[in-house]
Amino acid sequence: MIKQRLFLTAGTIALGLAIATPSASAQWTVFDPTNFSQNVLTAARELQQINNQIKMLTNQAQSLVNDAKNLTNLPLSTLTELQTSLAETKSLLDAAHAIAFNVKDIEATYSSFYGSAAGSGSTEALFAAAETRWQNSVGAFEDSLKVQAGVVGNIPSNTSAMSSLVSASQDAAGALQAAQAGNQLLALQSQQLSDVIAVLSAKARADALEQARQAAAEAEAKAQYKTFSTRTGYVPSDISMFKGE
Image (cartoon, rainbow, N blue to C red; front, top):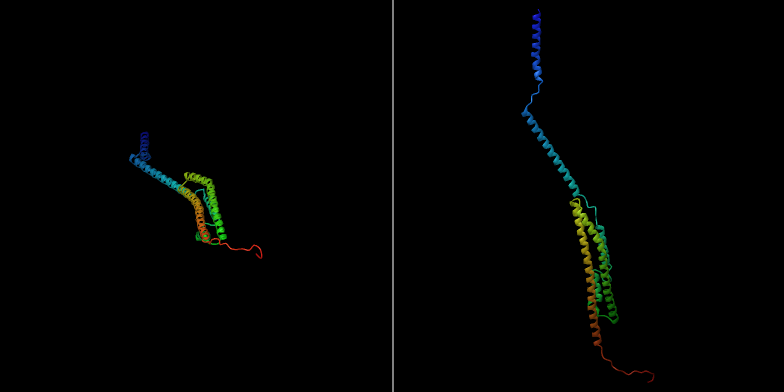
C-alpha cells in the first residue's frame, strides 16, 4: 500500500510539472534583433522629420518677423520742416518790390517804364519814370539779399535734418524704413535745390532790372538830346521895361 501511495504521489507531481512547464515557458521574453533594428530606424526617421518640421516652423516665424520689420514705418519725418523752409523762401519771393515774379506784372511795368516808354513823355514824366526805374533796381537788389539771407538761414535746420535722416537710414529695422529715410533725403535735396533756384532767380531779376534801367537811361538821354538839338536858336527882340518908352 505504501509503495502504491508513493507511486501515485510521484506520478501526481510529475503530471503537475508536465502541465506547469508549458505555462512557465510561455512567459519568457523572446528578443528579435532584426525587429529591434527596424524599430530604431523608424524612430530615428520620425525624429528627423520632427526636427525638420521644427526648423521649417522656425524659418517661417523668422520670415514673419522680417516681414513685420520691413513693413514698419520710419519713426522720423522731416516733412514739416522742409515745407516750412519752402514756404519761407516762397514768401520772400512773393514779397518782391514793384515787379513781382509774374509775367503779366512784368509786361505791364516794362511797357510803362522801360523800352520805348523811357524816351517818351514830358520832362516831368521822364524824371518820374527814371525815379521809378531806380527804385525798382534798388528794391530788386534788396530782395536778392533777403532771399540769400533766408536760404542761408535754412542751412542749420537742413544740416540737422540730414544728420537725423542718415542716422535713421543706417539704423533702419527693415526695407520700408530704409526706403522712407531715402525718400526724405531726396526731399531734403529737392528743398535745397529749390533754395538755390530762388537765390539765382532773385539775383538774375536784380541784374536784369539794373541792365534794363541802364538801357532805359540811355534811351532817355537820346530822347532829351534829340529834343535839345532840334530847338531853334535864340532870336533877340525889343522889350519895353517902362511904360511909355
